[in-house]
Length: 449
Image (cartoon, rainbow, N blue to C red; front, side):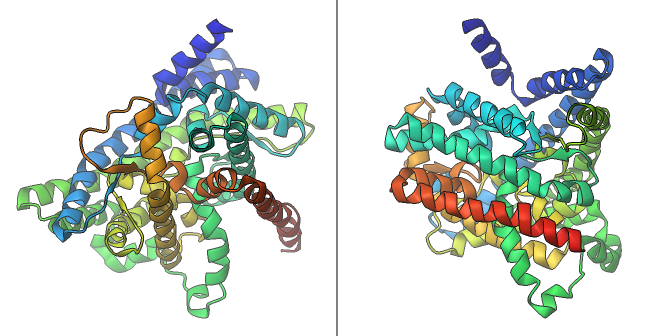
C-alpha cells in the first residue's frame, strides 16, 4: 500500500505535464492502441499542455502586474488578493485528507460508469483538486471528515453529470468528438449561463442578435485580426495601468503573442487526442454494445479557440473595473486573470459565439466569482496558513477564481458547512431537478427538433 501511495504521490507531485502523458498512454493501451502509438498520443498531449501552461504563465506575468497597477491607481482598498489557481492547488494537495478525497472521487467515477449514470471517464486526475478543495474547506470548518468526503463526492457527481450534459457543446462548437470536460473551472460558468442564456433568448433584441467575434473581425477589418486585436487590447490595458510607452508596447505585443500562440498549442491536443478518441469509440462499441463513452480531459483543449480568447480579453479589463465598483467585493483580481478563458469557454460554446451574450453572461459569472471568492477568502486564508503556506507579513487575505469562488463549489460548501441537515437536502432537490431536465425534458425536446 505504501508503494502504491509513493507512486501516486510521485505523479501528483510531478504535475499535469508528466501525469497526463502517463495517464493517456495507459488509457490508450486499455483501448487497444499499440504502445508506441499510445505513448506518442500521450506525449503529444503533454507537450500541448506544457505549451499552454507556458503561455498562460507568460500571460499572468504580463497581465497580472498591469491589472494590479490599474487597481492601485484608483485607490480602492481590496483586502483579498487573487493568488491564482496554482496556489490553491498547492493548498489542496497539502491537506492531510487529500488521499481520501482523491480516491473517493475516483471511486465515484467508476461506480457511476458501472451503473451507467455517466458517460464520462475522467482521466484528468490533476484537476481533481477542484473537487477536492471543497472537501478540504468543509473539513476545516466542520472538523467532520464524513462531511468533508461527502462534499467532494457531491462535487464529483455534479461534475461528471455536467460533463455529460455539456459534451454536445464540446463536440458541436469546438469540433472535438468523444471528449467531455470535467474541469470544474470551465463547467462552473454553465450553472449561471444555462438559465441566463434561456432568459436572454426571451428578449427580442438579444434573441435576434447574431453578432459574433467573426462579425466583429469583419467590420473591424485590419483591426479585427486576432493578433491586432491582442495588440490593441494590451495597449489599452497598459495605458490604463499608467505604464510608460515602452512598457505599453511590450504589453501589447505580449497579448498579441498570446492570441497567436495558444491556438497553435491547442492544435497539439487535437493531434494527440484523435487516436485515443477513435480507439475509445471502437472499444466502447465492442465492450458496451453501442454505449457512449467520453474521455474526460482538461478544458485547456478548448481555450485556444479565437472566440474564447477574444471574449476573455474583453472580459479581463471589465472584470478589473467591476472589482472596483461591485458592492461587497473584497477580491483584488490578479493571478487568475490569465485563466478567464477557462471561465468563458463553455459560455461561448453555449451562445454559439454570440458576442453580446458572451459579454453579458461573462460579467455575471465574474460577479459571482468575486462575491463567492470574497465570502470564502477568510476560510481559504486560514487553511493556507494551517498547511504551512507562507503568506508573508502582510495583512491581506487570499482568494482565487478557483476553489469555492466557483458557484457550484460555493453552493456545495454552504450546503455541507452551514446547517447541513437543511442545506444537503436542498442541494439534492436542486440537482435532482437539473438531472430530470437534462436527462428527460431536454432529450425529449432534442428528439422533437
